[in-house]
Length: 405
Ligand SMILES: *Cc1c(COP(=O)(O)O)cnc(C)c1O
Image (spheres, rainbow, N blue to C red):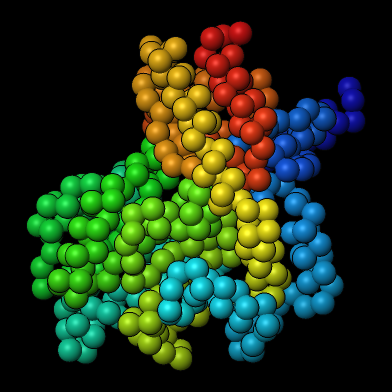
């Protein structure tokens, strides 16, 4: 037995023995990455279109990102939010530049960013109700949404597989049909504080909000003094070819939740709040020990710098169109296996006619790593740095896996 095999077995055994069983894991131990490729402990390389679930925006170990993180790690890693640090100041400045006049709160994950959005909605509701607490707190979300695993996020996530076993949930969430404006309008009442949706639903099959729907939500919110909260945790930070996915729709949200790609692999989340609502949080009203550390902000600044320097938004826009078209041919060539292909930029879902697991395994065996999205969609999440050759290779592997070659 090779040393590498012993390592693999023992890692699997250690997981089996000691790691909580809350994940159905793929049978793979990854040890190294570079760009769009990762290597397992047996030395096999894979095209990684999981990207750590849309996290590794620059791919693995981008040299400029690594240098920035190494430099910062040797200088100052964590200070708490009781003090200032230039990196957090600069990152906030840049995010305000991208999102619009307002303020930013830093945290460590998507769930925490969304939790802050939910708390923002509560504060807005209290203000709307003349300062009275508990009268205006309803948040209207979308069916099939995913907003995270904390109690707030989970309560905004109307999926049985996620909520089961954890009830009672946080009260005050109602659910309309995505892309059905009337179903949202019908839920608005005096107790409503906000509307909260993903610009593109990433975890339940890549469902894209139509421009009319998002614009309709914006008007509804303006008319009824509700906050429009957008969860861009997965679809933001360049994944669709715009920095924020809602930029495709020409709408202005009141607050945005971000995370995943923002740190390019370093845990960081952020909530941006438009200036009209930015003063709802006052000293002491919210906090986090780790949020926006000098190290995490250095990583995020490197992500933003590389996106700019390597013109990644332009590249995603230009390269995603032929890639999506090539993927859509799969539905034509394998109509019994592929139901449809949809998405925007580098956030694409291949809806399968049957069970996903065998196809995901067949793709892995041919060297392509991808996650599922919902029950019948395979997600493709290349890093924003993926080359045309890597995109083409993903289509070839998909074709071979479907054809059984
Ligand atoms: C991943 C995700 C979250 C949760 O983010 P975590 O960092 O896992 O807490 C929330 N919303 C959306 C749309 C996501 O994709």
